[in-house]
Image 1 (cartoon, rainbow, N blue to C red):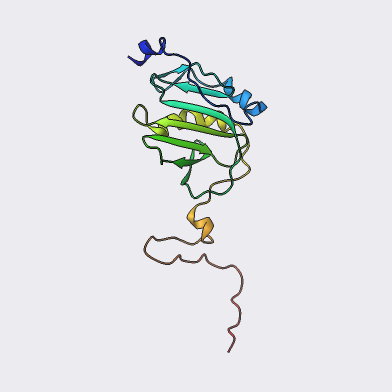
Image 2 (cartoon, rainbow, N blue to C red):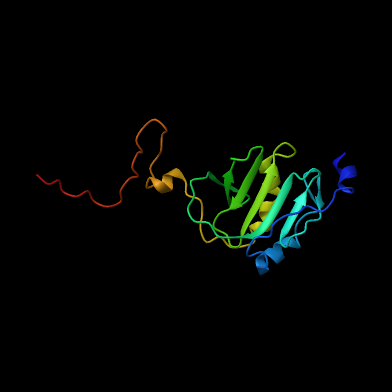
Length: 166
C-alpha cells in the first residue's frame, strides 16, 4: 500500500550539502529513479536531494564535503566505494568514498535492505571518476594474507634478501 500512501505524502524537508550546486550533482539528479525497490519517490525541499517512501525510507543527498580516511567499514557496491555508519540503526548512512562531490544515502532498513537501496543508486554515482579507493587488509599489510588470530603473512619478496649482519 506504499503506492497509495505516496500520493498523500508531503514534501520531505532536508538540508542541502554545501556543494549541492555542483554540476556532477545535477547530472546525477536528473537520472534518479521514480522508485527505489517498491518505494515511490517524494518531493524534497533542498537542492540535490531526493527521498523515497512514506514514511521516508531512503534519502539521497549529493554535494557533501569530502572526507579523508575513516575507520568506518568501507565496501564496494556496483563499482562504487561506500562507507557505512550504523550508529543510528535502523537508519544506516552510506557515504561515497573517493568520489567528488560526496553522496550520502540514508536507508531505514525497517522498510528496505540498505544494500538493495544502495545497489539501485550506485550506478548513477559511479559515472563520476573515483580518485581514491577503499583499502582492504592486504593493502594495509603489504599484500600478505591476514588471519584474525595470527600475525599477517608477509607477501613474497621479489628482491634478494639482505645479507645478515653478524
